[in-house]
Length: 237
Ligand code: NAD
Image 1 (cartoon, rainbow, N blue to C red):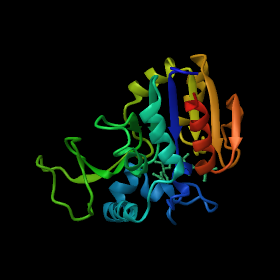
Image 2 (spheres, rainbow, N blue to C red):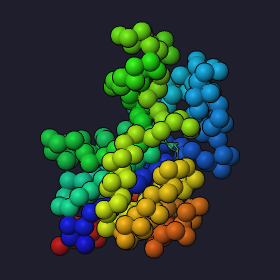
Image 3 (cartoon, protein in one colour):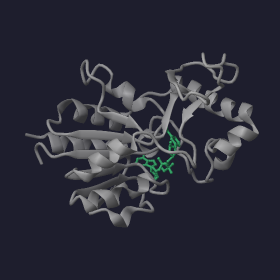
Image 4 (tube, rainbow, N blue to C red):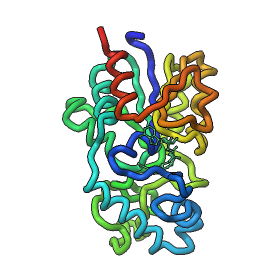
């Protein structure tokens, strides 16, 4: 495997043990809200204050959580893997970034947030993006006069960096999906793109997911155990 080109996809399950609730918990809600009420452009148009407050609360909650062993293991992989690596996360938290800070050195982590980031604001008019740490609900407008919204890819919107992700999948040797339900497209289709490239595919998840059958191998267990074990084996001399 040394030098293999690897694409890793992570979902809400990788942050669950840090205390960040997953999307479709047992009740099918996200922090008590229906997805349609907080994660669509229509919801934002209907009730911008409710939607801003929802993401303001999620952003504030990031200060009370920390990366877990799975984030730290992926940061080690980023630091030590000699071949191509792309970590694509559907997560809007910053736990991968925080685990990588100070570990991968001066360069940016080999990480893409395909669904946006809580700690970023997006201008609804000119599409400028800016790091953001406080509340957005009463923020001043962008320099262009546009209203700032959460930099989150809502249902019906185009995920970020799809060209780069699809190019990496088209040439990868190994695709690993961690803690994602396989319900949300286009990420749920990445395993098929990887197979088409002739890559080996591995799923690490607490339970069987909607997409489990599509993987060559599926391991069950908590990400904080499975991910460090997988990374250790990969980096072993
Ligand atoms: P999901 O909530 O639909 O599914 C979570 C998956 O993680 C499930 O398959 C579950 O079995 C698995 N899981 C739960 N705990 C686990 C653990 N400890 N170890 C390993 N696996 C575990 O999540 P998803 O597929 O990522 O859904 C996608 C959407 O939810 C994304 O658009 C994302 O932006 C959004 N979201 C993000 C966060 C976050 O940033 N942390 C949190 C909630 C939702």
